[in-house]
Image 1 (cartoon, rainbow, N blue to C red):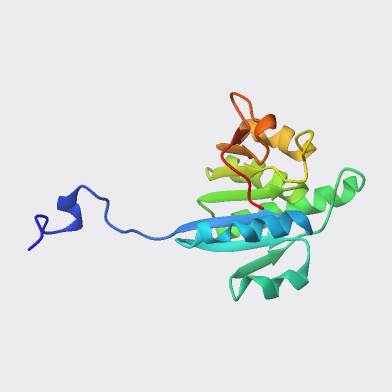
Image 2 (tube, one colour; image 1 turned 180 degrees about the horizontal axis):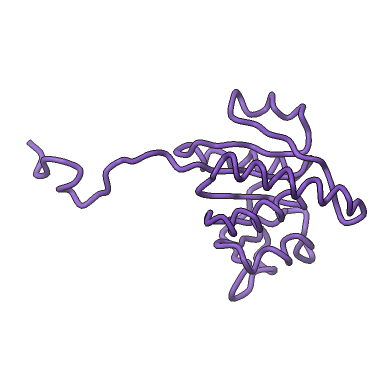
Length: 165
């Protein structure tokens, strides 16, 4: 017989409800990188958010939402994207928001943090010589700010713990 009669006696926390995670990225390489780390989300209830409806097929029945694709050269669309993300955050109430970039991830982390969610920014592996614009803007206020290139890491963030691809 075990020396512990229950999980409570063992010193380990009792299993509780699964954390809600909002995984956000724009399309292309950002989306590919987000999918490449999704095994880390296996103990969470995940809602994926991206800019392409066709990506729904890649997340096997997981919750899936889309937002308007926007960037610095489409400023009015940025407002729409931010509004859509605010609604998603209000309705999903995530415990954690993670993003691999770009503009949708910036807004998701900014708004998620305001709502009390823990936030993680993983800067794109494509940013070899310098951090992304979105990463530079949101990284310092993320709970965890990561880069995939050791030479871009610095004290205070971003931190390097390995690359995704």
